Length: 212
Picture 1 (cartoon, helix red, strand yellow):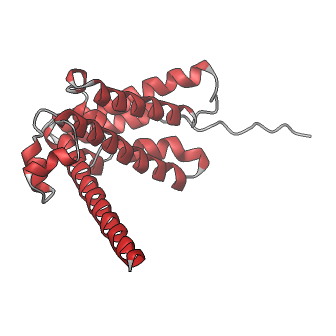
Picture 2: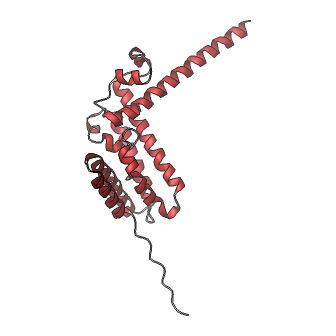
Picture 3: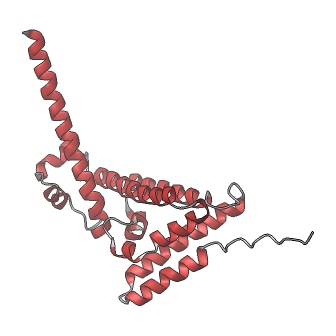
């Protein structure tokens, strides 16, 4: 009888923990979309909890502060962006990885996907005013993205590859930001296409053959 009661108690505790974890996951997921849609300053606790289907009062069972929630949301947004890029890298032929990354990032679809797209573009101007945890998550994502781009270079491991990656990432983010800012779709597409053209490596020249 005692064993049965203990097992029932453990089952109840595990169910509560699982429910709390699911609720936490839902809050972070909602917040990760909200910060990209409305910015950090436009993301309030009450709105997030309502969208997550939870009461405002339940917030502090999950987070010590609004800043703690924003930090997790920033990390989630960055992780989602990294997962998209990783998928592109996995699918692309080895000699077309960088171009595939560029075309996916600077696509019409990504221009329009604000709340599920790149957090660097959506939140870059606000990030310097955020808590250290938020800035740390952003910095980590930028460094990981630069490293991923550098690894696509035939000169990977050399100082030049890292410098090219810095320029590539900065240009990608800047082009997407401007493409979202303008109210002319043709101009937005031209900005992205010009960036892709400029950043895509030129194809290697075929090896010359000599007559025997």
